[in-house]
Length: 175
Image (cartoon, rainbow, N blue to C red; front, side, top):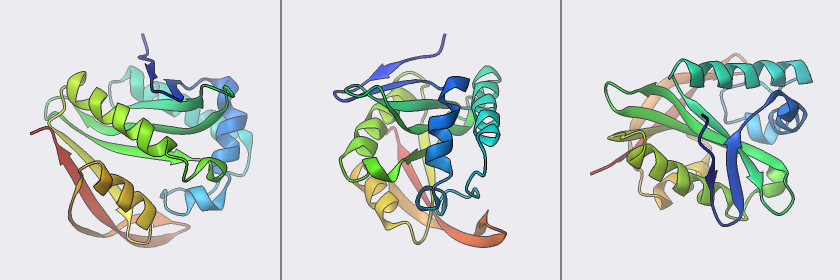
């Protein structure tokens, strides 16, 4: 059964195919995808494919991705979760994205705090990593606020629109 998590203002829940339109609205926005390592979506079918990949990763124990839903409006405003999950090595990488209309209100921080706790307490992770484009200062600031340490730079690590980009590698250890 997919775990549902709740914060004061958010419900973190499974993403379903009926969420594809909302996911498309998020992932077709250049402001969101420019630092995501994925080109902006062009149609809703691509969002449906992503929903299916989230479900497959969860079933295959390779990751878990929650939809970020506002409790007050029931609106899906983003996603957050773990990928590159390795239970044997007790590590995963975290990723998140939120529609720009919901930026700078603390939603990402609220969801991140809950997911970090889930990773350490339920998945028994020892290490949570995060990869961030050098230019994405707001994401770097968010991770640092939550205790992540910058470990270094991964050169030409992610391609965006066919161009390689350097990224920072951050980590947070349970200890």
